[in-house]
Amino acid sequence: MKRVLSLFACLAFTTICRGASLVYSATSGQNSASVSFTMLSSGQLQVTLSNTSIMGAASPGDVLTAVYFDAPDVTVTPLSASANMGSIKNCIICPNGTNNVSGEWAYAATGATHLISATDFGFLKAANLIGPTNLSGTIAPGGVDFSIVSNAARLNQPGLVGTPVVINQVIFRFDAPANMETSAIGAIGFLFGPYSYYTANRFDGSEAPEPATFALIGMGLVAARIRTAAKSS
Image 1 (cartoon, rainbow, N blue to C red):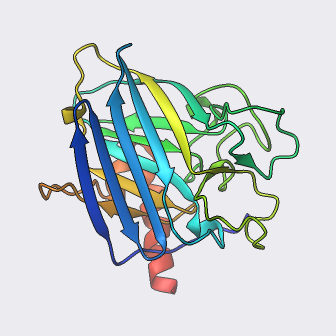
Image 2 (image 1 turned 180 degrees about the vertical axis):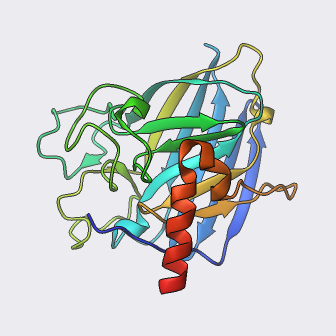
């Protein structure tokens, strides 16, 4: 699949904290996203990642592929990744009624930084997948398969025809420390397309981690590709 290499220059960001939930949102150009973090009564951390773009996706670069967040001294274990019923599109071999996308999304962490992604960024492997159920394609994250498009998505666009995607949002659940609070979560970054990114700053001015800080888990490869793309554009 063609790799989309683009940088977003203009960013508007808001964050809302409601009780036990923390919500971030960001907009850059025609792409918008939000992510909420909620501590459930079960003690699990629920992360809801949404593509809120008003304009429909016209290419893989308009598909929400990942979110990363800063949570120092916090260890979480991924349990599941679920789409809303009926929201998986362009997957002719997916079982009817399925909403389990755990085998299409991956999780990795190093230090304070946690990454949830449907694409491999050159380093995520099958071992990073949240679950074992592969719905389509290779048994590993890659491309923009099962990434998130907004409700306005135009799935007949040449760059998206035949590409399995999820409409609106994916919900992730993690085992979390018993005393974890959403206040432990810091800077947030959203990523659109296989090799592009933009970051969202917290309202208190703290910055999302730069891609180079992911070097221990391979995110340095992403930063290198981004720099190469910026020079060639």
